[in-house]
Image (tube, rainbow over all chains, first blue to last red):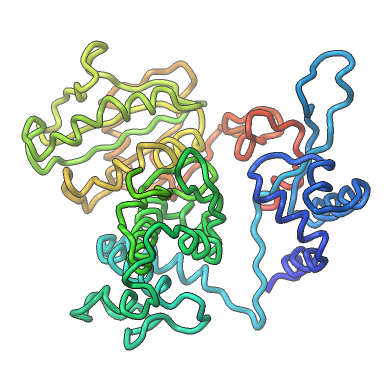
Length: 255
Length: 176
């Protein structure tokens, strides 16, 4: 574990500061001090103090920007604005390093031309994650569990997640569970133009290194999540944008 | 410096067959996305009038060739993996055979230079023969070459700058 990462993350251990941080990152744009203060329900000076602490720790970055409509003389000085910094921080006690191994495995999949098998495995993993939701432990019952199992040896593959899900029959019209699941998986969902978009890519480092493989696996995983929730997997589609996750979901079934 | 990129793909069936029709239909919209992408410089076109025309060449009828020039690695990367091009790429197995050897190559060119197709195919050969190096490389084994600034503006904030963002501290940028 990197000591700098621990110090950066530890800065979030204050309820107001954390509320300020979470508000800023959820906007996906620059946020001014007044806005952050209002959102956190604190005085402007206190919000400014926490925002600057977050910049100092490297979790946010700041700049100056004119807020509001007016421009030219009389519009005032540019305001200090904040947004999420691009880095990432990991704290694991005791020290664990899944990222390095994941990168090696991704390279192996590429070398073996195993991308289709990897997508199938990701889809099964998605079903398990949706079926086993609410539990921190392994997913669906009886399955090969987190190991994923050596490719396709389970003849009933894909059923394990759905069978374990409390709502395999589906709760039509309730999109809250998908939103909730995506939120807990770190995707940071938000609505835009009738679609659920994902502000954060939970596999960022891998997606930078092996974009085609990882983005295709992620799409398969998202379709698996839908299946695990008893929904139409076609609601997830590849819909990339710079600096966001590559998948979006239709909110109602006909979109 | 500008970044030249060439890639080839081997068709499963003739270009005018029904199996490939979806791919042909996607040529126009995807080329439009490419040509309108930030940092796009140039693309080898067969025809100014027919948006579905693919590049004609002497390397075999089953080979589809894309050849373009970009301002930076980031500009090209965002088009390839972060635009409507990605979903098309994800369907590649429907139309193209998988290739054991490298099928995509990049290299730096002086700004204003329009490389020839023969030059591009030589770079691909070089990559296949000798592996990635400064004269022929890939996204994964990228070579910065002489393009120190990588096409970004002052402060190099190009990798994370939204257009309105002003004066972001370089310190945050350096943090990986």
